[in-house]
Amino acid sequence: MEATCGGFEAVVSAFSKQIAELREATLLRVDDTTRQLHTQDVEAIEATVRALEHKLRDIKAYVAREAAAIPQVEAVVAACQLQQHHLHHIAGHLPTYLPSLRSPEVAGVKENSRAAPNQAAAADGGGGGGPKKRPPAPRRYITADELASVSSYMRGRLTADRINAALDEMAALAEGNAAMVAAARRNRATGPNKKHAMWIAFNVAPHEPLKGRSWVLEADLRTGTAVRLDKTGKALLTLLRHLGRLQEVRVQADGATHLVYVMLPGAGDQ
Image (cartoon, rainbow, N blue to C red; front, side, top):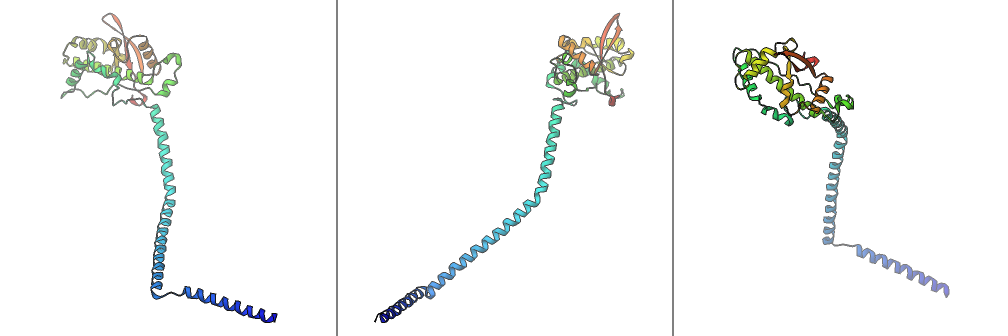
């Protein structure tokens, strides 16, 4: 009897399991409408995947191009760093103004009482049939390294900019003297400084150490702005002589000795 009951329960269990499987199969059955919705969803997913694949290919191509450009970028960066180093070096050694420019510090030189007559004389010297235009006075500027090589007691508080401003001013005065001498020798000196122009042309300029050179009388510096005949100015002139920019020459004129500063050109300007 017990065996019969056990078999009957097994049959019922198997029958129940088959019914459950039939129910699951019934749930999985779909009609045509549901099948169409599933198809649309699958197509949409496929289109999205294809778009992502296309973007992925673009990203890979972009990364490849950027990777190929890295050596070129590194070369450009290295060149820029080298250029920056050169510019820093130049900025540290270049004066604040160049020979073709004028320092604002010596702009007042043009207001000197002799400036206008000197310019007029220079204009007269440039007329037709006159001599060839004279070369400008040498302006051999001092570099910061050159100044640093001088002993501290000699340079004191002088800076390269101030020294170069003095060179600019003295060169302008020397060019003015040369213009006055040329005008006086051609009998074209005019204005209130005509007498002075005649004096330097026939009493100072003929001395052998001054011929063909750019020079400034010590008296010319009394009205200077960048260099004066005070303690600082004397130290500046001494420094310029030490650095080979100036040479002192003493000449006799009208029974008196006059101190003249000759501006020395560089080796390549001889």
